[in-house]
Image: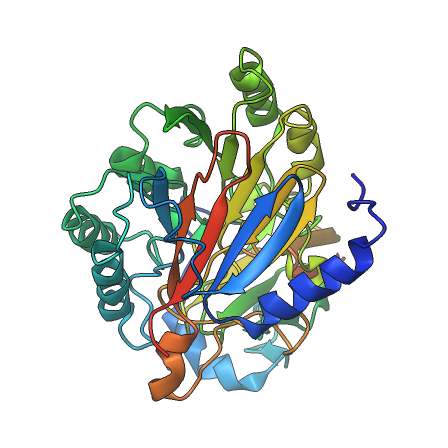
Length: 311
Length: 117
């Protein structure tokens, strides 16, 4: 795959990088392959009050209890309260994995109860922390109904085709996330009947683009999967895993990672390792958050708004 | 084949906790008894990442991280359970050879145990 090759491409990427690293809430939209950014509070989200939208949360890590966040149940609850208070009610919620920290039944049960209280339909994909028990069955028994293989599936809503992929199973010595040939073949068959004008949203736990290979922040065979989406005019890829917002545009594909609801992780290469980042307790909620994604127009890519849990 | 401590292939051995602070030191209990040594997991790395032992040595991994890690070794055909913070697991290497392994959650973490006759 190649970077977007427009004359202003470098400048634009530079700007987006700055926005991503600034990290606070922003509106991020794409129109005709040209990304535009603006801070929350601009008219962007409010301009299309009836637009189809959904919300993404990620990396709630229920069961974690170390210094970076002694009780992620509380911050997940805060995130869900924020979801319920959104001015534009979302059609449903996706969770991009690491629902639990250790795949324990009690951790899954708490997450399910808290998420159910939003009365939103929930669509999930597992993170590597969700498949530690019973070969992933403790996840699949709860969230795997109607899925294929290790839990991948697709569905249609609001004129958008949604695809949930699993890239945390059978990880290899290349150090990266892994989809596997069976899932990639399934993806090819899944999108085959779709018109190229159908907006596509792909969601998976580990980024489907290489954020930082040294810490395993990428997916080894993602290029094979994305090749099957090349003909589509609007592809939005939503991931978690890295506990911070990052984004990138390649051709018609917009990649975006969400904040965690539990604890931040360091920016790539800015620490000796990718472990939980302990910040002063009063600042934790600045680093956690939710993401709302809106379909502005059937012909345009989706608008993404990240909102931290606290200022 | 390796001798498995439990059907799952990995034995948690509380008795080795006493050795947790000993780093990679080789501990010989008695002449003729099996040797024991330790690999520490800290900051998403195995230390030492390359360990050379004599056949019959019991190797213990201790997780000192805030995050769980596991041991996946294709050459041995095993995939351990996840070790939460301060948990450990042990296994005995009886057959000479080179055993590369990774963490099943964070496969950029690599280690090797070389077993000499």
